[in-house]
Image (cartoon, rainbow, N blue to C red; front, side):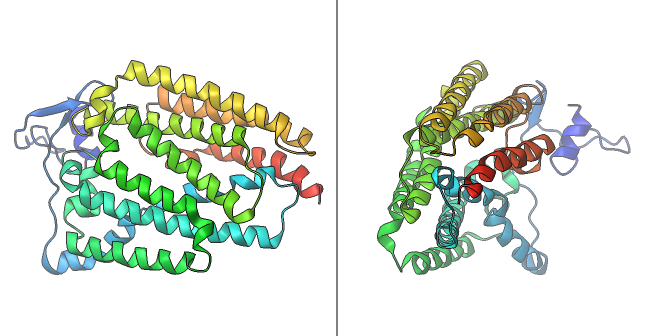
Length: 341
């Protein structure tokens, strides 16, 4: 990436580069290597509007603070329990919708708290420095007020049957431990993130009362490890290991090997799930195996060839090949299950 291209990517003319009209920008020391081996400049915190300008941008910044782009993870993972259902009923779907809403509120609460806690570290990252709290668009007291409001909405959502939401309580406790310490421990950090998605899937089982499939949960865990490791790989290549303490325990070579290992585990356990736990209609879902394998292969291609992976959710919901493959996979899974009714 040339210096002028780095400036465009980071939202302005980078210090020490040349802007479009040929004038040199201010000087700066190069930071860690970028994805193509060039330097990513440490630009410091972004310029934050003040007064009425900041107030006008506050509603949009608050929306970004909640990270709606990450909400599809709850829609994708919580209903995993439906794969083992012999019949889908309106009551089952309603309970799953309830669980998705609860986990969406819980995850938004976690994002807000993490952004407040990590604001100083985020300011040293070429992309995360633009997050609402790190950039100063959302003052810290306002962010804490948003967190309190989300906690109140979450409590009201689960008040009818709090015992059913034991995976959600474990998820919140796990994220407290992650924010305080676990995010700084190599390997433990990505395993903790993957465990959070297993808890989402368990929440789907808890509210529907369906039998838990160990093979399916192992598959979810392995896939989420692949995604978390891919994100760590992207962070190392974009901003180096200084941004996140746990990154000092990784190398790109180690991550590549771990990604391939867990991708193989994910495919294997999915096949074992289809053969043993998918129920009497498993022969239809078995035809979905090639689509699952293609999905993993496509992600590896995007990660290792195209050097993407910084936002796994964006890849899953915006990559055309992924979307078409997911629709075909869903058709082969859902068709026989619906027909079995």
